[in-house]
Image 1 (tube, one colour):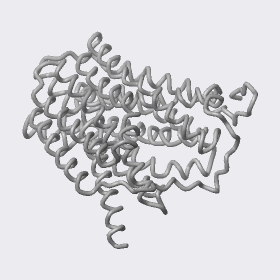
Image 2 (image 1 turned 120 degrees about the horizontal axis):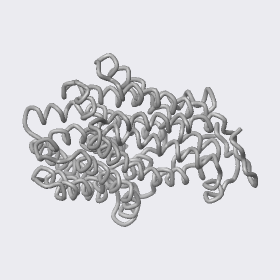
Image 3 (image 1 turned 180 degrees about the horizontal axis):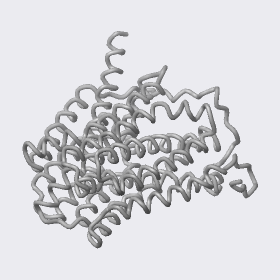
Image 4 (image 1 turned 120 degrees about the vertical axis):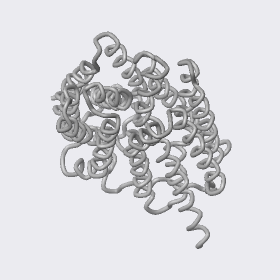
Length: 402
């Protein structure tokens, strides 16, 4: 019994460490190292930002792969394949002198993120923890968010005290260590347990996935989550450069990115409770409006006070919308169908990878990133209005949003 307890917590620790590292080393901190690389290697903002887009596209399109490898080879092999891809990606990034070589590195990192990220992590935790699996999965996702929150200042410090090549080399070493830990501690259970059903949330209606995806409600939620991901990917990619252009030091700009991630992490922890206390559609609409306000402030944040205000405001809205969008689908279409169509939403959000390229193109033309934040702010408000008016869909009816 004691050995079995050790086994499941060892699995939890290994997959949590992997997910924390993934969030630290990739999406949230890539903009920090890109700032130095682009300047030293004379890359345009458009070319540099496209590397971030490739990372997102590779991650999104490869998301079905972990399920296939887990069925055939198990969770340990899946995570180790992911770690190996990360090592290769980081090593190639460290020796990159041309943008095409760096693009190859980003593709490898994107696929590695999928293979070592939350798909195998959640499956392994759900299999090992027969009781309280939802709570443990919540801890796992929170630890991943912690990595994203502290990634920018850690990466900035490495680049400042070493070099951007030294940063990628350090990440390769850590990825290799994580791969070894996965070999040592990750193992599959023969009969993984399913996530327990929540009796407090009965299935509202028996929706078929295709039927649910044809409703205006699903389309609005998908649009809201896609807009949110546009903001997240763009802010993570060019937010550092934008703040430096507005007068912030590199150290302070990295701190502001951390404040955004920390705020969103804390809000995600309570957003579920908020959705239980009031309509999840209202929470989603409020999150979009608060995000919009954060983007407007960020566009003109040329003082530390405005930069902190933008970070807290945007992070708060991001956290609310991220959780509420998921809850709306579960409330409207039931746990089974809602969970299945959620995967379609995340596939749709892959187009958000175009955001950094658009932002880079705007900056190359007019010398400022501010317009992209204002564009996002307007789109978020436009979506918030019909979502706030949205009501429970019913079978066989074209349900209005009023």
